[in-house]
Image 1 (cartoon, each protein chain N blue to C red):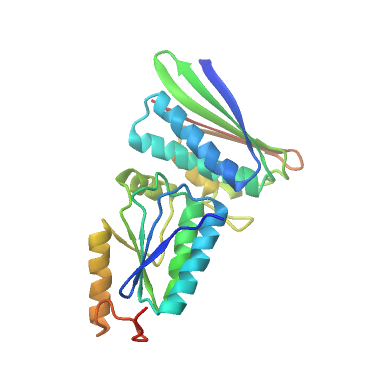
Image 2: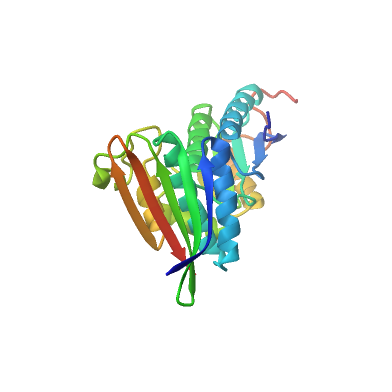
Length: 133
Length: 134
């Protein structure tokens, strides 16, 4: 089965969605991400979607669900790189990405997460368990 | 109004929903829709294809390029032989859902289209038509 690769950079898990999401792929991503958060103690999840041509309510629900589960595991989710046409459509569709912070691009998304780590008195990029993997 | 192109796609699985999106994108580009309009009609099609699959138990979509004078449009008709919708007004309401969705499908698809028409008979099925004009 296809899977979307998850990269770990310090305390942040980074995912770039570059394929048209279908059901199984979406479910696999949610599972893989939550497993990775628990295993690595990541404090942030950055989902990069500049390649996505649409975000419909199915994908929106998946993103909201990932953010909600991540929050329970003490990790914040930032959605980066949404195309302007997708943003316009999303608003008209009436989809609210509850619990998800958004950033214009990956750089700003990382800055957002960094600011959160600083607030928590946590060094950027450090794992909670201090383990280096 | 005349129809210049017609094609029918089956909606039986999640992969078919992806295929519908890709085909709608190609047709939207063909009639010269701008990027935002393309995104809107593809998103609306995705919502309705998923409704057809999740609530209608599968079905099909007929995609047509229609001409009205000098205007070109893309018309999509989703049809299933599922349980039908008893209360269409309620089903059109945002956040109303009979299943596991967010309940934005019908209302959202209507907002994203220039034309929207729905007919449904309980026990017989549901047909939803949307159109987006250049």
